[in-house]
Amino acid sequence: MVDELFVTPVAAERDRELLRTAAAVGTRVTLVTDRVADSLSDTVTPQGVVAVVRGDDTDLAEVLTRGPRLLAVLVDVSDPGNAGTVIRTSDAVGADAVVLAGDSVDPYNPKCVRASAGSLFHLPVVRSDTGAAASDLRAAGVRTLATTLDADADDLDSVDVQRLLAGPVAWLFGNEAHGLPDSVAAMADARVRIPIRGAAESLNLAAAAAICLYATSRSQRAES
Image (cartoon, rainbow, N blue to C red; front, side, top):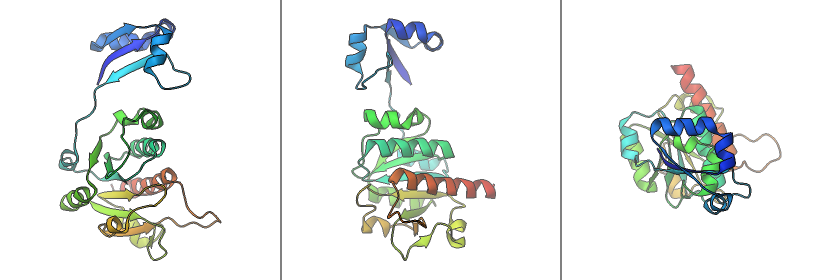
């Protein structure tokens, strides 16, 4: 929920519909100078509108009571741009929530907020201890799939993995530099690798997450 808007005169003139909507829902609007708006924003070229937004206090336990079918779990992910992009992708595929587990970045980091392109406010983004998340997901009947580069992991394109994707499913994605810890991968119901047919050694975290999430969404839609 937006509690307050700080708007420059130029932005107020440009975004009249936004201000009408704010007035309709009772959101306070404060007119500020360009200098004040610049001090409130960390971008090089601010847009002249700054919102104070109330955070979502949903936790993983509450998410699991809703019978989710698709979740993305980021384990020790440190790059806010990657985290925000995964949140945006999760929203796009219709995932039920994103879990930031372990020592993952703050979802309200400014770079993460911008990378999510508004999706941070469209679906629950919750924090959890990694071990507790794995245990809670299993108890709720959600299958956990660990992404890995290991040659002996199941291929995403294999028939067996495609059957697993019918859901409910939670994908575990690891740190950009180190991937998932072995101890976390061992908690998963299956380990899955994305086949790489060219010369690239690996995929960017956000790209790998997009492939896995879209593959799961497609399988679940086919089953419904």
